[in-house]
Every structure is written in structure tokens, then in C-alpha cells.
Image (cartoon, rainbow, N blue to C red):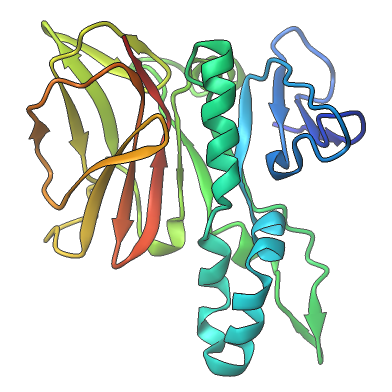
Length: 256
């Protein structure tokens, strides 16, 4: 599915998918770390925002990356996996402003143009395998552009740093009276949350589940289980950490 990036105005980076301007358009906000940097912010209404961008991450973590070159070159790419904290703050603020869970995606922003001494550091086959946006489709839906766009707009996405492991099988939902509420949903008085760890996780040692409400860390657990405490109102999300590194970022569930 081909798209294009348009720069200018206050939005800093407007991604349009597809390029032909069809009625099933996705309006995506890229480079959210630059939000408001050109003057008075324009919030706008977006189908999804780019929570992780490797070009921005590299600039934000450039000291750590330079340090790795001389101390531990194998750690260079892991430094790209550290998201920018203010992106999470903007995500929370936008969600509160629009009173809805705002969908998220990630972008490697690879250009294959960084190298030295004949060594290419940002090869496409490498960079495109470090992070991706995973989309849940409803059961029985055909895998096509229309279904993917609909899932995006519903917030049925999560971000995974695939270089740390296969995230397939991950799920985060709220449950109440036999009903499941998934990311992108508004859940009224849910009883509890349910988190399924990825299928690739055998022994869950080294894996942590972190619960956030309104971008504040609420609880950390190392078990794959039901969480039997009644969630308070707010925007909830989870992060999965593996061996001390952020592995998966879920979308939001709005609890009312």
C-alpha cells in the first residue's frame, strides 16, 4: 500500500495513504516529536500518530549512540529502540483533547544513506526488521487495504521492536460482563484487564508487563494472567519489557 509524506505547516509531517486520494484515506501524523516546533501548535484530527521514528530516536539518543561506537558497537542499534518521552506526553494530551484513544504506528524512516569507510549502517533489510506496526484484523476479514485501514482507525494496532523477539500472540483487552474491549475501544466499568504474552515467550522470566494510566506507571507484573483489580477511569495501555528493554507498546483503552 503506497503512501506519501508531505511536509509543511504546523503538522511537520503529514503521511497520506494511499497516494491516489481515494475515499478510504488514512491521515497519519509523522514526526510527532516536532509538534509545535514551528510556532503555535495545530492539533488536528489524525487517524494515527507516529509514536516511534528511528530518525528522531537517533537524534534524541545521539550521545548514547556515539558512546556505543567506541565502547560496544553491537549496542548501537539497541539505542534506536529508546522512544522519546515527550512523544508519549503528546499522545496522552491529544487523546484527552479528542476524548478518544488515538491509534499509533511506528516508522523506521530508513533512507539507506548513512555510512562510512564503505560500510552501510542503515541497510533497508536491517532497519525494516527492527520495528514494525502490528495490526489486528477481525476474524473472517479479508486481508486487504480496506480491512487494514478500518483496523487502523479503530486503534487495533500495537508497536513491536521485532528484533527482540516475535510479538505474535500478544493481546491487551478489558473485560466486563462477558464483553471484551480492545485497544481503541471505550470500556464502561470494566471488571479487569487481560494480557496475553507473545507465543514466543516460554519461560516468562525476563519479561515484565507494565500498566499505564494517563501515561503514569500504575503496576508492574511478571506473570501472564488476569489482573483482578477494577480499573479506574483513564487512558490505559501496557508495555511489555524483555530483558530490560522495551519490546511492545500497546494502543490505548479508554476506561469510563
